[in-house]
Length: 351
Image (cartoon, rainbow, N blue to C red; front, side):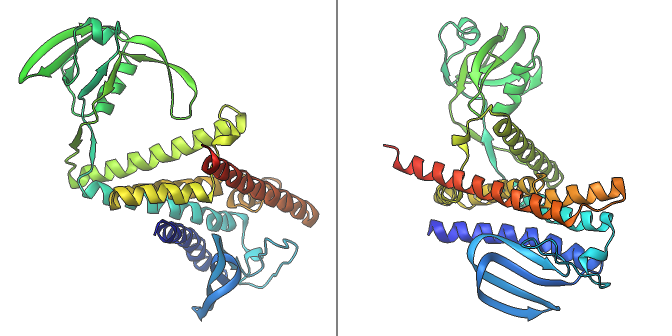
């Protein structure tokens, strides 16, 4: 079942990505010859709107083949009025940006749907208290609930954590314990910990962990827009930072995952419920958008780079340069896919 759900998730995300390219291409007068979900041998196809729509055998991506554009041979060009090659660099960039934009837009609407379902978040209820920590010395105990800091009402664990991490002095904390409000004062301590990428960092903390208690967010319809926007920005920032750290070597290459990881994560999300599947789908959609913006030839970002070069210099790169860089781009992509698959298999074989 998890394979089917994973396939449906990936296919839907690829469809929206390619639909972005298709829509803008048609708007600027470019003929789209093929719209394919998957690569390789065509399993099913039909002709409509002057385009061949196909589902192909290898469900690891998709593409729209515009008239005059062929990634397998960039030297093949057409200069008819409805060809990609006759459009201005600005129009081409709009077409190229439309795919990633469609993924970000889809993620926004998915997060918006989650927001409408009255999602839950961690409540500021304390689980464990580290011995000799600021919280321990201030008398904070497990099951205490932090309800205010410096007079500001606290309703979620994230709100509390942000205030603590940004503090530069002692904090006046109101605690709910056994139906009564207790007050205490403590000063956060700069402590070494690890972030989501496994890196060692220093952050101001008070020595507490979450009890795992959740609380509904109770978002209004207007607040749901803010929630969807914040989640989309958070996902984009997280993925960008992760990619940067991977390139710089701050995060080891063994952390890179492939298709098997996606299937496993989808399976785990499916077991939890539809909200988890939608949340994971939104995260992967942002991931797909960000990855396609990388300046690697054969990706949207690589083509954008070529067109920016033309806009700035008023000259197009030579066919030889485009061909060599495109081949280099495919080598990088297949190398990353192979590394992700290798890491996935290695994790499966771990005892």
